[in-house]
Image 1 (cartoon, helix red, strand yellow):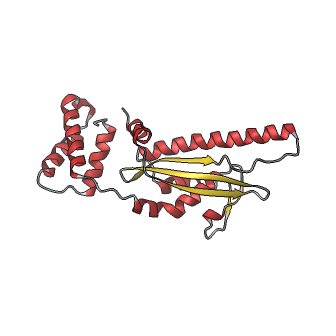
Image 2: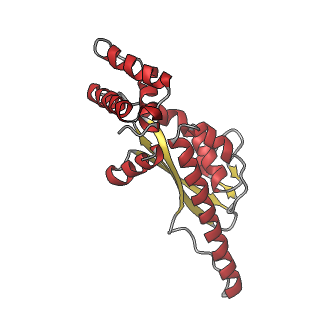
Image 3: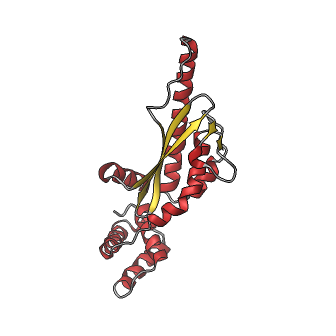
Length: 216
């Protein structure tokens, strides 16, 4: 099972700690409510989503059927676009290729509807946003460091032991899946773990190999 699939299975089966923040975008006529959700696994963000509230204002087009249909299509297109973007961002997060700050930079000033003002993301540049993704980028820049601090994860000794045993077993069963450096690192780390506390970088590298080589 690939790493992202393993994390997705964990989120579905066991749930995950998450932060949810409301973003209300006022386009000058109506207020549109969106929710940014970031889920965490073992101290790091692995899933991100933006949803449009079902309770957002339904735009009254004065009985104009065509305009109502077009507005509905625009809303559906925006929702679909955000789903695709969030899915890709989640893959980047879960594979350790991006941080929340990186995602914020990718989404910054992205032009999508609705545009307007969003009080929840007020910063030195004001409250103006270019759409839900831009609002989410501002929210991430405001909150990411605090979230990372709050979600700091301390590995239990048994969790480290389990990862090492999983990796050693996988090396015995399918050594061709590992590089020479990875095999040496796992063996040296297993030996060191018997008498010493592993450093944070050692544990993070162990976890990365455990995930990438599908050892769990």
